[in-house]
Length: 420
Length: 174
Image (cartoon, rainbow over all chains, first blue to last red; front, side, top):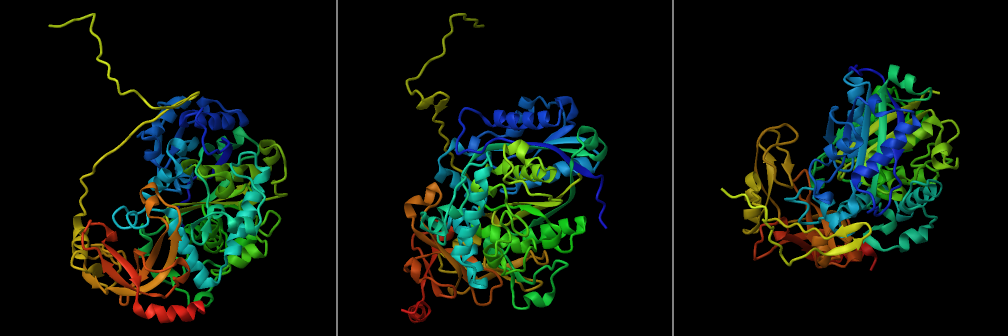
């Protein structure tokens, strides 16, 4: 077994309300608001923080290099150790795991992981151009230059391979936008029907405007601590039980056609005719889940995981991710949503916060936002932070957060566990 | 030696475009030309001018890539150039109605991933000459090449193969 290091706990968190544009605050002030919320919630001061990890994706949005140090400076964390972590859409998840490593290694006893993105500096279509620069700029950007286009091809192949329908995609949109109605931090809470989703403007067929997340300004902060420190700070910390990270080729075209890396609850005969991952599935997501499950002793994900916050930048990727995480078998993602298993009152609620589709996706903040919402969920303090308890699950013990980049190039899975 | 207490910075008349004053939001422009080398992938772009799509074949394990890469991701060995066929099949497709700012004027456009006989991986390209509703997985397509090379991967694009007409009628039940 791999050396797991010291136990790591999350002791506090903070999130700004995500919005299309918040020009009255720059990225430093947004992080400061989330950071102060987290400090205050756990009665911490600056002196209690040993170091930090900065999480942000694109230098292009702000045309400011080294934004990380500007936040470190503004928060008053200089001269303590810090570094920037970047990996596309998974930047937040990677930074959260880097914070985990800072504690697990014994280097720090407390670590503030702060994430932010200010996407309102440019218009939506220029923003899409910046994001598309996170595809191979020799071979992919000049041809498609549009992430929704890449995901549309993956969704189409998933539909071809497994019979997934656009109505099933729409149900993800309905669920997540609907959950967000009770989340005061969410950017786009909405009550929707299948017709609403299908009749909204087509972005890249089969994905409509309501199958796709939005651009946002926002920040999120997670404070992690060692076991001794965690229980000094709070009687209700949340254990970060294990982490897993997977990767895949930058170019979608380069994905191989191999065999499924099996989870303990699967057998080879389940997939005798499936060429994997091709473009229908995310091998990086499966690899990340496998590593995280091994670390957490999870052999039957559907039974052992109580709640999931996953990277639903597109409705199709939520369905694909059910399968990568082994919540159902490959090919069953469509029926998983049809049967309501991922609903708020389903077998394993997925994105009770509203996910990226409804909360927004200020890239560097997103994966950390998932950590904060999961932390509150497992602490059972949703009503305190949301001002209502509609989204609080009754007694969640084990939660999973999942952050995802590119066309599935970096994916992180972290398993969190309630202590109280 | 100059020490001039009356020195005055010269002012220009170009001004700044202001979008809002509360908070103050101004226009900030950025423009740059890169000196971009295609380096070890140069052959691919040069070959498009000779109507050839060059992929890569691993010298050691024989894996064939539908895209150029000079080292094999399966075994790490060096690859050699491998000429891909100028026809293939649609592995998946979409029609983009929106896009990055640079490509917005070209919308709607079709994107496809092409499967080539004899290659283990795919190739991303534009497809023209088909209505969105008429494209299907498995549709045979043929490569066409721009006469005026721009040294971009869009120097090659695809059109439906003649046999797609008959097959398409069957698939769409038309």
